[in-house]
Image (cartoon, rainbow, N blue to C red):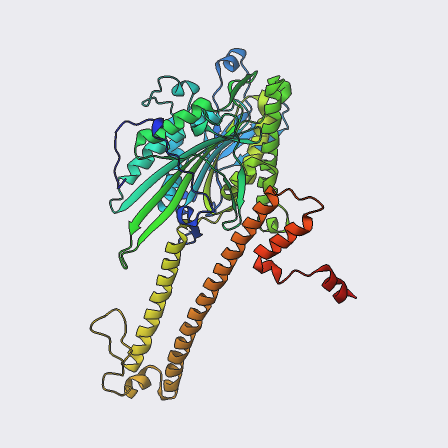
Length: 551
C-alpha cells in the first residue's frame, strides 16, 4: 500500500497463518529508538504535560427506563474540562478536572473529533505505539463508544451508519491519512483477542481453537509481555480491517444481567500494526517504523447486588472485578510519579495488566475514555470511575519510535558519522587542508595545500601557542576511533557467545523436560548434560574435589 486507499471487496477468508510479530523476532518486531519522544499534538490547553495519559469523560444519556422512572441525576458539567458529582446527601460533592468532558448530547462523530483519537493515529503512522481504552461500570456505554451498538455487527452490517464508534472511524481516518504519504510503503496487520476468565482467546481463530487458550510470554530481550501464537491478518484493503472487526465482535463473550442486556463478559484488545517503510535520501537505505494502535474495551465493573448475577455470570463478574482491581492498583502505583521506582508494580497479577503494562507506563501514547452514568443510583460507581481516571491522568509515558534494530544502528552510526565530519571539517579549516575532489563530502587524508600549515590562519583562529593543541586533538580523535572499533568488535564477540550459550541452555531444558530421570540413572543423565554443555563443564566439580577443597 503506497499512499493508496482501495475499495476492493474482501472478507475474513483472506486471513493468513502468519503469527503476530513477537518481541522475540527482532527483524520483524523491531526495537525502540527514541528519536522525537514528544507528543505536542496531545498537549491540552490547560497546561497538561507532554507524555501524560490523556483522559476524557463521556456521560451516558438516560435510557428509556430511567426517563420513565424520573431518576434524578448526580452529575453536573461545570466547564468543558470540569465535572461535579453530587451524592444523595447535600454535603457529598466531588469535583474533578480532565482533558475534556463529553456531555450526553455529543454524537459518535463528535466523540471521534473531540477525543484526540486522530492524534494517536497520526502518532501510530509515525512509528509510535498508541492505545485507546474505555473504562467504567457495566452499562455505562464503553462498547457503544468504542464499536457502536450491537446491531451493527449482525448478519447485515451497515457500513454507513452514524452509530459507528471510534474503531470504525479510526479505520477510515487511518486509510485516508495513508494517501498523503507517496514516498512511503505501508503494511497493515491486525489481531483481535479477548481475556475471558483470565484466559486468552483468539477471536480471529475462534472456530478451530475453541478450547485452546493462548499463553502470555515475557520477552527478556525487549522487556515486555506478548501473546504467543496470536493469529494476525494482513489488511491490504479497508474491507480487510472491517472484516477483522466484524469477526471479533461476532465471537466475543456477551451476557445478560439486570443492568445491561448486552454486557461484555471479557476484556477485548484489537491491535492494528502500521509498518511504514521509506527510503533514506542520503544513503539509499530503507528505514522501517513499526507503529501500532491498541483498541481496548474493558469489561465493566459490577456490583452483584445490583446485577443479580449468579452461576456462570457470577464467576465472570468475579474475574472481571479482580482484573480491574489489579489494574486500578497498578494505576495507583504509577500515578505516584518518582515514588513508583521504590515500590513494586504487580503487573503479573493479572493477564490484563501484563498486556497493558507498556501502554500504561511504557514507550507509547495512551488515551483513556471514562464512561459514567449520570444517575444518583450509580453515584458510588461514578465516583470510583472518576477517581480511577484522575489517577490515570497523572501517569507519564516516554513515547519512542519503534524501529528495526539494524536500521536503528544505521541511524545512530550515521549521526556519529555526521558529528565526526563536522568536527573534521572544522579542524581542517583551521589547518587549511584541502578536500578530495573525487569525494567532496569527505575530507582527504593528505598533506596541506602548499605542503605546510598556514601559520597565519592558525594564529588568527587559535593563536601561536595553541598550534600543537589542534594536532593533539587530531591524534586523540584517531585514537578514539580505533578504540571505538575495538569495543564494537568485543561487543559482537560477546553477543555471539551469549547467543551460543542461550541455544545450549534451550537444548538442556528440552533434555530435562522430556527425560524421565530416576534415582538410578540420574548420574548418567548429569554426565550426559555436562558432556553436551562445554560452557558448564569447566565450572562443574566432582564430589571428591569439592570435599577436598572444602576440607
